Length: 73
Image (tube, rainbow, N blue to C red; front, side, top):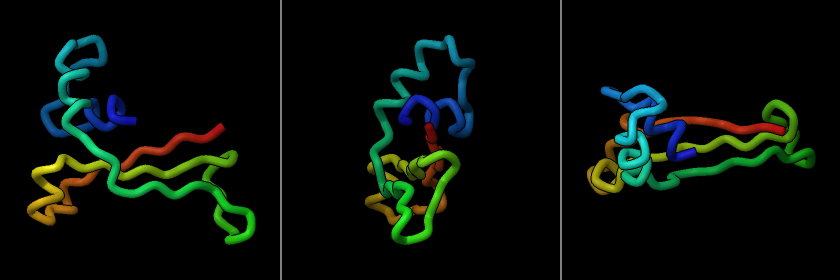
């Protein structure tokens, strides 16, 4: 997830750029929501939603800088 978010971050590099890995290490998980039949929440095919943020942005409460990705399967 961190790699997907790092690639989508402003100023991102191509997927094969080694800086993507470095940028991915700068992100931490902010929130995660999995599909839940009991709650009537289904993301794709039993997927999970993820929001990640850089620690500095979290400390400054800059949630507008959080990034989203999801996985299903």
